[in-house]
Length: 156
Image 1: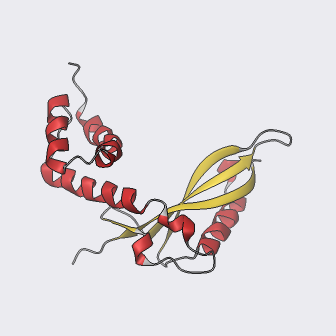
Image 2: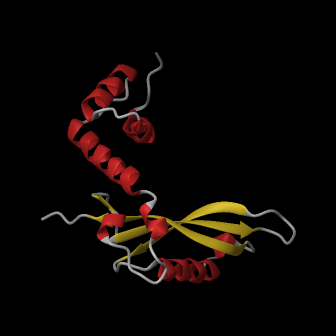
């Protein structure tokens, strides 16, 4: 068995978590499986990652069905304890055209905010930031779809 670098263990485990959750695996069983694969890491960190991924998996499609002019309920946002600079993070799928006549390309854009935003506000924010950012070059933004949202849990 090949030795896996320590800095790759946690990201690799996180990538495998949605499959384990969908299969109905318990955190302990999955941790045991990771240990057998040489991917285990600190248990408290693992359990935190498991809660974050499970919350995201449970609530991953709820934000798509919120009316565009309404703020999403907290039940539509996954609670996470990630190190985020702001309280809310929204993931959007965008379709861009790099050159006229070319097919649309799919990309993802994350929007951070201290306020809960409506899907319409999130889409407007993506369009505003797209115009102001040079890294996107001449790619023309065609369409935006809000996919998911996360709420940073406060530590008291």
